[in-house]
Length: 233
Image (cartoon, rainbow, N blue to C red; front, side):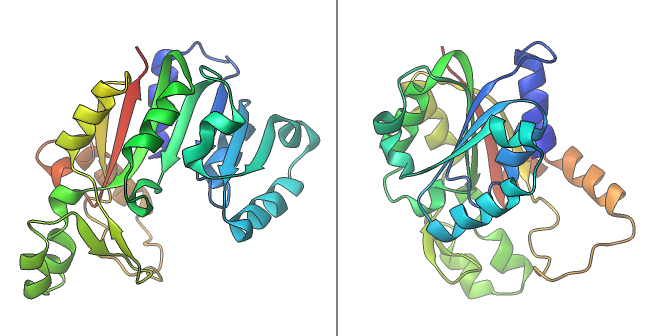
């Protein structure tokens, strides 16, 4: 996913341009820190105090230049208009957040307003069109049958959350002025791997296969996650 995001950024902005990036629901700040290390000015917005503490610990270990390029704000992603002016960012990320939001449209609209013209909105969501894949591949036939006509599921943390359909998000992005520009599948082959599975010796080959599948039909359509990139008109 990081490679896909970097590809989209490289395709829109000159090499070396320092971008203004907002990471909504930054979690522990892994993506935000990676982008700050790349030279961008990054703002992380997060409401979970445990995650914020972890992100601050990681940031404290960075050189002065990187610490100066990243700021962390405690707040709800649905309140971007409280913290920032419209058009304040070149790139807005929202990765792994929408599944916890019952009504995502206001959040999406608020993030789109934060984008400058031509800005990039990057979303990582659970793929509702492939919810039957995980239980089906695990031999849970009852669970697979129950997953076809719903957007609700229970994640690996035991939380009841929701997924998004590509067609629905495509329409939503068009409606908020950031129409879909590109999309990818994420975790096509590796979704059923245990969280504690050891890293395989041929991890480079595995990543290459995942990368190829995530860009190729029909494989990307059954990925566990979808990475969508919209562009502000």
